Amino acid sequence: MAPYPPIPLDFSGLNTYSVYGRHSKVSVDDFAAPVQAGMTVRQLLAGLPKQLAGVDFPDLVARIATAHRQNRPIILGMGAHVIKVGLNPVLIDLMQRGIITALALNGAGIIHDSEIAMVGRTSEEVAAVLGAGAFGAAQETGEVLNKAITAGAARGIGIGQAVGEMLLANRFPHNDQSLLAMAAQLQVPVTVHVAMGTDIIHIHPDVDGAAIGKAGHHDFRVFCRLVSELEGGVYLNVGSAVLLPEVFLKALTVARNLGHEVKQFTTANFDFIRHYRPATNVVHRPTLEGGKGFNFTGHHELMLPLLAAAIIDEIDK
Image (cartoon, rainbow, N blue to C red; front, side):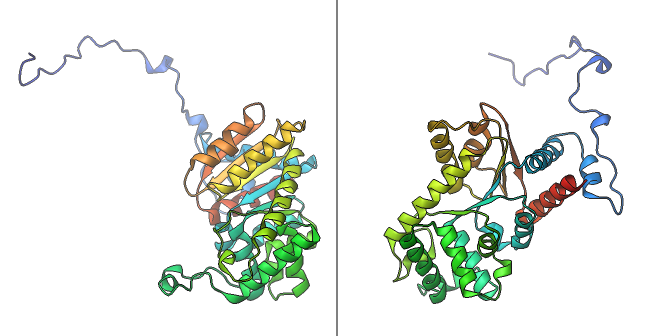
């Protein structure tokens, strides 16, 4: 048995070495530069510490700018929260500049975006109406979107194109703030990827499950086409923790299975917290054979304007 109380260990024989000869991971050469008033975005990025995201973020910006200059695709897959925090104008501007070449949305994306187009506002207070069974029961939202999807399925087109064209045809007052309407006007492909029962329009009386399935599968096939052409391009996953990372991985395997070369490309995930599926299905697995994946944690309303400003500054230099 050891004595009680235990005897403190004697450190007098500990072997030491000189800090001057030791390798260190952090050096003053890697430190940030002081921030100055009136700095450009390029100057701000150049002054970031050469550590972690301070290295990765400028690298991603450079890769996006290179893809744009080389006329390679830059696809943005995003959850609806990006719309709800007011970032449509930033993304529309990137589409107008030809930087974002395609969008992939979940089902909630078309709901919030269409409500923005129709009435200039969205996102109800769920807790206030759930008790009465009124959550998601906005008449116009269900009617307009379900009608557009059903008509789109009958025409043999996808949900994204159908909704975008419907918004333009109705000349809603805030179409200029709508991703779907502006994408349709700019002829930027939008695909919509739906899980049945996740969206409020699925509870409305005029919902057509067969139409959603048909138009949604059309969009998945379109997305597979877009991913098949991603060599040298960029795929960004913003704010989708499960659905779009799963869809992206399936589309990538379809493209490779059919013989398309999709190995040297860049992926990045942006979200409030780090989730398993985006890290695995977007950042790591797809780039095992080439390219590079990035993971950034932060608020969309801060990170995406910063990313957009950095990209524009890099392209215009």
